[in-house]
Image 1 (cartoon, rainbow, N blue to C red):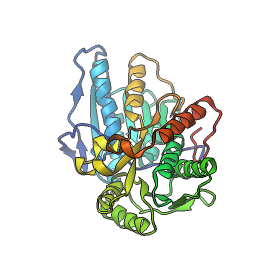
Image 2 (image 1 turned 60 degrees about the horizontal axis):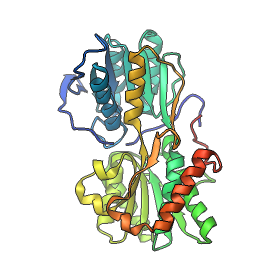
Image 3 (image 1 turned 90 degrees about the horizontal axis):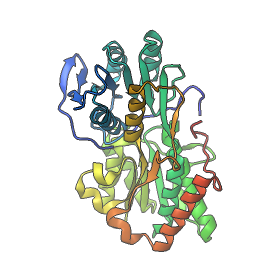
Length: 358
C-alpha cells in the first residue's frame, strides 16, 4: 500500500434523501439537525464521490454516520453530492468554506481536493473514508477488509458444490484488492484444513492481478462478467465493484445454486428483496459508527489525525449473518469460521495483503 494513500472507490444503506440542485453539476442532501442543540453552532459537511449519495456503499453508510451524529450530538449536517469528476474539487471547497468545523470526504477520488482544502483551511477538521491523506487536520478512516474477506473465502469454499468460487473487482486499487486477497487466502486455508482443491477464479494473489469491470456503476458489466465465471463453474461469487455487483446478484437469480457475497454493507438490507435468496453473506465495513464516533469526538474537542483502522477486533469489519441461506451452512463450518475469527483477533492467525492498511 502507498504510504501516502489507500486507493478506493466502490460501495451501504440509508434512507434515500431528496436531492436539490444548488449549483451547476452539484447537489446537496437535505440538512439533518439534532434535537438537543448540545453542540451549539457546530455543523458538519460531507462530500460524496462521483457515485452519488445512494450508492448502496460507502457514500450511503458515511451519510448514515453523519445522520447518527446529528441525532446523538445535536448538530447540523449536510451532504454535497458529486455526480461527476468536475463536481469533486468545487464541492470540497464549498464544504471547507461553509463555516462548518468538520468536513468528511468519501473515497480516493477526493484525496487531492481534501489535501488542498485541508492546507488552505487549517482550522477546519477533515476526515476521509477509504483513503489516507497525510495532514495534521485530516483523519483517515480505513478498514482491514482482508480479515473479514478471509472468513468469507473460507465460507465460500465450504459451501461450494462445484468446487469453484470466484471474485472480481471494479478496478485494480488497494481498497478493492484487499477484499480479493483475503477471499482467495481464505479459500486456500479451507483447502489446507480439509485437504480439498477448491479453485478461486478472478484473482491471482501472487501476481496481484485478475478480473475487473473497469467501473463501479454499470450493472450490466457485472452481470456479463458473472455469467462468464458461472460458465467456468463458479457457484459462490464475491463482487467488489459497488453498484456493478448488483449484476452478479441478477445473474445468480438466473442460475439456481449460485450465491453471492456482498461487500461494504449488508446486501440483505441494501439490495432489493428479490435478491435475498442468493445472498450468502456480506463482508461488512462499519463506516457508519466510525464516522459518527469521529464526529462525536470532534464535537467534544478530541480530534486527532491518527488513522482509524477498522478490524475484526474493534468491530470495524465483520461477516454478516447468513440470513435466508443459513440452512446451507453446516454448523461445523460455522464453528470453524468462529474459530478463525478468534484466531485473527488474538493474533494467532495473521491475514496479510500488500494493501493491508497501516
